[in-house]
Each structure stands twice: as C-alpha cells, then as structure tokens.
Image: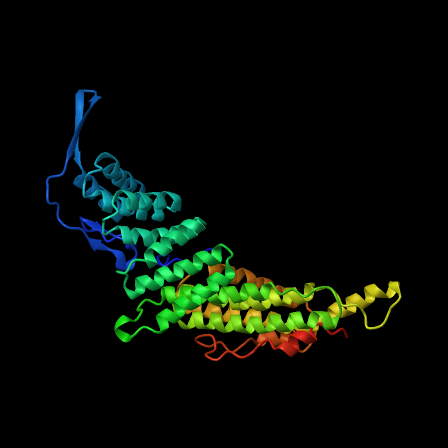
Length: 410
C-alpha cells in the first residue's frame, strides 16, 4: 500500500502553474524564471514533401511555450516531447532547467515515475546552479520512495538537510522523507528515531519559524505509529502453556495501546489522507491481534488427557477463546466505521478508504460466524456512537489482563 502523496489530492492540472517562463512544482515550489538576457538559438530544418521541401524553424522558447500549452490542457505526452526537445536540441538554453523540471512533472502526471526521476536527475546534473535544483530534489525524494530506491532517497534527503536555505516547511519535509525512507528499508529503529526527531523539531519552533503545513508533520507522526504497529505485530506467542504465552500477549497489548495513541495523534493533524491511513491502521491493530490470538498454539491441558480426547479439548478451547476475544473484532469494526464517517465528511477518497471497506466487510462476516455470547453480533449491530471524529481521549480498549486471559483454557 502506497503512502499518501502530498500532491495526490490535487488534479493534474493543479500541478502546473501555466505562465510562460514558469517552472512549477507541488504547492510552494512554483516560481517564475527571469527574462532572457540574450537571443535564443534557432534551428531550421528542411524535409522533403510532395511539393519539394518543408522547413521548420524552432527555438527553445517556442518549444517551451508549446510544452506549457500542452501541459495546461493535460496533454502530458505532447508536453514531455516538447520539453525533451528543449533539453536535447538546445543544451545551452536558459530554458533547459525549467523544461526538465516540467518534463518531470509531466512524467509524474502520466504515472511514469522512473521517467520523471530521470528528468529531475538530469536537471540536477546539467544545471547545478539553477534555482530549480532544490525543488527537483524534493520531487526526487518522493519519487525514490515510490520507486523503492532507498539509498538514493536517503542520499537526496541528506543533501536537502544540508541546505541551510530551507524554510521550516521544507526542512520538516526533508526530515519526514528521510524517516519514510528508513521505514521503507526496514530500518525500524532508525525510522522511529528520525520520526521522533522530526516531530520534536516541528513542535519546538518559535511562532515566526513555525511549520505551517501539517502534511509532513503528520507523515512523520505516521512513521512513528507504524514502527509501533510493526513492533506489536512482531510479538507472537510461542508454543507452550498459559504461563509461557501470557507475557507475549500482555506485551503486545501494551504496544498496541501506544500505537493506537500515535495514530490518534496523526488524525489530530487533520490532514484527510493521513487521517484515513491512520484510521485504517487502528482497526488493523485489533484485527491483527485477533488473528494472533486465534492462531496461537493451543496450550496443553492442565492435566493429562487420553489422546482421543485431545481434539475435543482443542475444539472447546478455540470456542472459549473465540467468545473471549470477540471484542477485538468489534473494535476493528468500530474504528473502520468511524474512519469512513470522517472520509465521507471530508469527501476525500483514497486507496486507504477502499481498503477499509473491504476489510470492514470481512470483519463483519467474521463476526457472524463467532459463537454466541454477550460480546457477539447483537452488541456490534448497535454500533458505537458515531461522532465527528475519533475520540479526543481514546480509552484503553485492550488491557494487559484481558490479553492474558485470552490464553486461559476453559
């Protein structure tokens, strides 16, 4: 599942501010270039046609204008062709840097991240002194994450973090991108440390240096929550009796609570994409915990049983356990329902909301086949009280005693 993209909520036409001489990017990284200080080179070509020869006279500026016009009308293939011609045919032109930058944006709009990255990389190498280089590096930080080019992503994040000219929003973006890359590479402890550093840095800014854009603060917070979720899911009860399994389940329950609180903090940043992702993960915490408990090895009976009685013992134990942990299914359903309410109110659809609907249906079906009991289907049908948001002070839905009891045979 891809992480939310900062620009994913914008239509393609919003990715390019179409003004001649403008190199555009996501949000704050669009700015005009200066007027040419010298005449641009012109190429005249002739080719045979039915009447003799046809001539074409082009220069970098006319091609750049053609690319901007095509991009404006979302004809991104035509835009990419025009911008590439500027870079290929007029390598000395001052339009090369904005053309490569806009070519990268066109590649992104076409869903061709490798092509987009190639244009931004070419810009960085060909025009190292261009003001387009910094925004190109930010674009590369996002693309390298999508392309799973971890080392390149960390390298570009470190270059950005060494840039003393970054404003607070840019710096927190570079910090959050590094945390995302570390997590994507499986360096969970490093990702957790980087995410916490990012959140702390953003939280301690003075008013005049405050981070204004919540997107990457929420992104760092999400990375922190993800590291806790992964820690929880890595705690698996081993074979053995109740005394062996109980400490594992208690520890997992405690980490789940920490992860849940971290995801609630993500939601409080009020960015709709990250809120949907966090809401999905909260439900998944309980869903995965139910799976872990129900799939744990059955503890041996407290007293020896004849071999022919063991299948009955295991069946009865599983029924007992299913009744006991039904609240975990209810918690998954509850938080997925609440998240869908949030999504409907914001009007923002994403891969996360589609996944919530699929898993919510699965959880409801799962509940239908659970053994009857006070925590069964009737209680879930009543549902939680739907509020405008997830709770401001979430309760401890899972407690260590409840988790340890899940290993007690009846």
